Image (cartoon, rainbow, N blue to C red; front, side, top):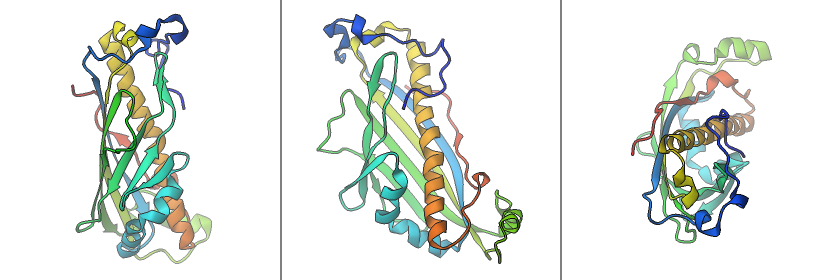
Length: 242
């Protein structure tokens, strides 16, 4: 995957072939640069809250299936290591990965967060990830997807008596030590581009993951897969906090 949605002014490319080996080394003199993004959204499931909760609790089944095209590998009892993809800017590219733990739910509240993986030493970057989910029951007429019209269009009946809305929030912070040549660029350019790359990763992956979870859940219950309007992904922070 390449850097998402950058204008020519933002995506200055430096060819590593024109740089010395010293300039390509990860800098230990410069402070690492922090990039941050936050998102929130919803995902509607056309079933009772207990059915949805039971499905989510058995994440050893759906998590690996739905993570694709990311690669997800089991990590401990309630964790996974995610190999995210291939991203980069300014001629510097990485294949980020992180290990996360899914805590057992507490009163309908779910927490997932990143943890160190002793078997992996990321080259020049650190990742802090935290996401939360909570479940709420809503009436069919309260859905964002206008379920009555959706069911009627597909010829499904009857309407579910209740719908479960999953509300989620996530925070992603990455601390990066770049090769020396990157620090020759204006800091404002590095910050702006890094923030946009980070937000682009989430905006690409999160809607895809939501759709796959909805498809996996509803297909197993022989229910229609909710339309795009039943899931949202909205960025809630625009600038990094250093």
